Image 1 (cartoon, rainbow, N blue to C red):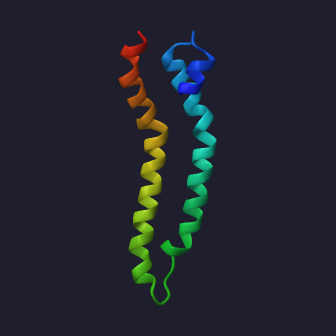
Image 2 (image 1 turned 120 degrees about the vertical axis):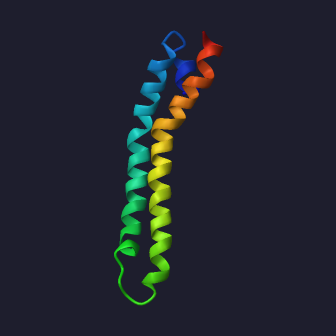
Length: 88
């Protein structure tokens, strides 16, 4: 966001945040989906030892989903809340 603000100083903060978030959308989603696809075998395993791996897979899956949501929704909103008064 700071990089885009430096490139386009006359653009409104909300527009810069929206464009920066859209710019990062594909890399974040691709990284999260790759990690989730790697965890799928642990989620659906039924063999010996799967009772140990299953809780770990649940926690990792929840962490990936929550961190993706945090990166794409909460962090841009928090940036806007903290920096809107400094710019105005």
